[in-house]
Image 1 (spheres, rainbow, N blue to C red):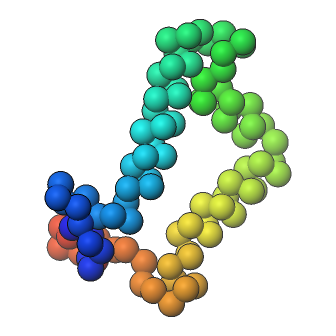
Image 2: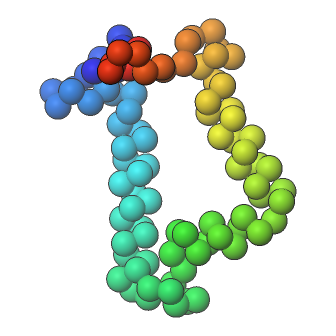
Length: 90
């Protein structure tokens, strides 16, 4: 399990469930877009939408700030960030 986070019966920390659901939804949408149209402009995949968005520097800056806020949020809230130590997350 992940530090002191309570785990479900499968050993997955409860705090990880929203990220797992988000990743599964993104993968499902990407798969559906590929099945429905592949590289068709009418049915863009997540990767083609992101590629178009990354052309603009302000979008890149906002994504960087969002990523940094996710990484630094535990530290700023006074909780230590998850770190890998000796094969276990703490």
